[in-house]
Length: 239
Image (cartoon, rainbow, N blue to C red; front, side):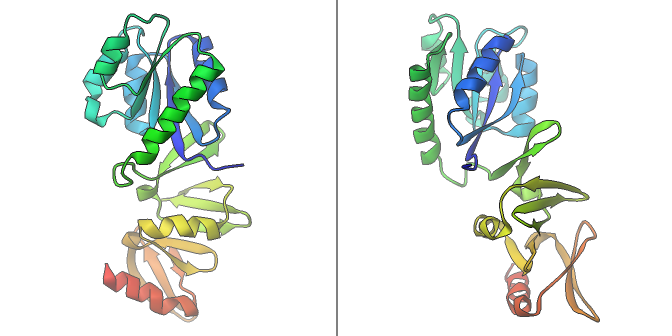
């Protein structure tokens, strides 16, 4: 199954409308839904917590409406916005608010597919430095977005990998060999066959009877394999 490349937030005060967008989006595995919101206050909180790449945003919601969400968040700090509405009278205001697209409910599969095509084209042109790297994991409470900057180290677990943030861990179905190719751009380095370590989390390197180990800020000690030692120490010194 392809790994989700982007994350999406769905905001609509109608449960059926939220369910409809989720079902339409299920046809595009490059997107993972990281949350649903019923009103503008929930949207503002979710934007801060999840930092999605796109929000499907209903215009008419109780309290804080879609336009108010953008005003309070500030347009330059908004992800890509696809407005949802039962009326077409807000189209001009939507594009003045720099919305990527404007969908009138009920949305057809063909119209939604056209929006996603436009959305993908937009997201692929966004500079990598602007889009913060995230990883979507599945927990007992649903999908959770992890920011790569928060991960201390990564442990191999068969065909899975365990991402450690402090004392908490999250399991994803991706072997560590594939993760290493992505994580090397984010200051991670292989310590041994089953562990990747983020260099800026290394507090010290200590020596024991079995060899050196990296001591992380969170207190974890990770052995450094003999054939990895020179590269590991050189990477630390180069920081």
